[in-house]
Image (cartoon, rainbow, N blue to C red; front, side, top):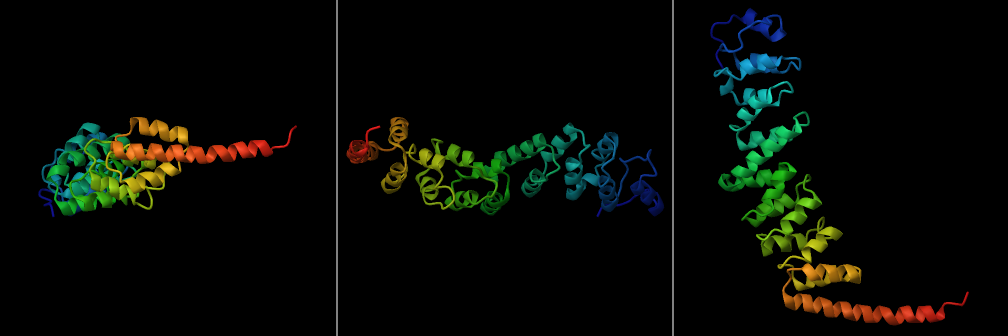
Amino acid sequence: MLTGVGRSESAQSDLAAGSSPGADLTAPLNEDLVLALLDRRDLAPEALEQLGQNSAALKSRKVRVAIAAHPRTPRHLALRLLRHFYSGDLMQFGLRPSVAADLKHFAAQQLVTRLPSVTLGERMMLARRASETVAAALLLDKELRVARMALENARLTEAAVIKALLRPNAGAAFVEAVCHHPKWSPQREIRLALLRSPHTPLARALEFARNLPPPLLRDVLHTSRLPEKIKTYLRENLKQRTREISPRTSISARRRPPK
């Protein structure tokens, strides 16, 4: 709890109620009073600047978060505070609906930058609950269980999974996890990305290839990084499919009555 040195209870109550507009907000204030002030959506940017210089108030984690998240906080002040947030606070900040998009992006980038030094437990938590940007970065985590948790993140998008699959450092374990994932593996664009990955197992590559139109499969295999043996097998399988389709097409054409 912050001390309320130099202020009477009545003066602090007046300040919280907004009846002391000229009050010095750099003087020591208790945490509850500062949070009450920050609940006011009409608080002037100048007042927020003063609170941002209040060293006693800024000792409170709740106060720092509330100042950064206030809609009228000057951007430079919010950015300065965000640089010193704990990882959990950065995550929660980035998920607030009222926070400006650029500040959310900055918070996410701060988290991504810190990931190499974040503990396994924190990475697991972030993979499950953080924004798409953070979850996407954790798809290629050195611990497969973190990547698996990120795949379950409700905010993760198809585009983020595809981008991770096509990264040169996407490992075999991650690729196989996507190959068998009940949500991601049935999606056509994900399957196309998997057919371009060097780590997709033959059985899954064959399954995905069978459901693609021949022209599209040929284009995918042309730029695929699958092992040559697998690509050769898929091309042979494609030729067989084409031969099987051609006779049926010819018979159907012959049976069609003349106009």
